[in-house]
Image (cartoon, rainbow, N blue to C red; front, side):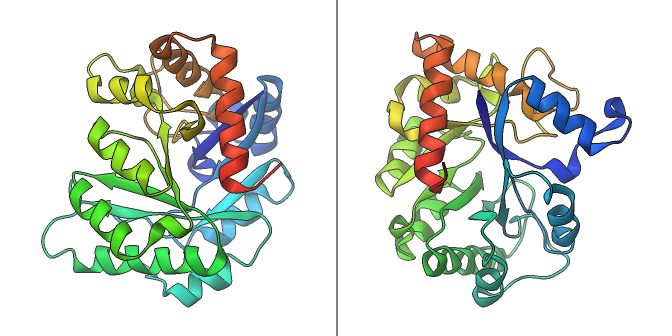
Length: 257
């Protein structure tokens, strides 16, 4: 059984499932997907996301606003805390910094990031961190805000081993996505070989970043199997070991059974 530790179920292309979420869920179950963590990226779509997954106890949720979202509600820490007061919500985010898509004065990204960290500490729920071309400031803000008190995960890891070590020292796990299957993702491959077995997760980030052999096509939580296989190959261990370890790590980090 597998866990997809980061997916956007409300964004999936359900065309091949007759645009019926229940048919997708049946397919996921048949392909041994045990749990999924559905990640929030904005608050305007949040009520619909809650409604979409309400019937499925194997889907957990996060609450947060993605660093690239520059329209809509920019929540205060108190607003995030209130939304996180739901047993289905097991994490805060995704949050963080992105200097690739957002340009100019990004003080607002830093402030939003800090608000999410405050909410995570107040609710004792781990952080889901997005970071792109901002690794120095990401680590600096995590340190300044004492984010190690709750920890979390660096999702869709794309940085180098030095960054991974700094993040792990701050009580963060490293999550590998379909990028680990890309031939030119050398720094990600290096990290996948070196991360301690009790500090990694696997994810799809679906519907984005489909792994090989589905690269360029819509991504689905079932494809987390390809991520597990590639991580296993890189580490030189059976795929069953990666699946078991990633599941254990997910349940430990997010305090779920």
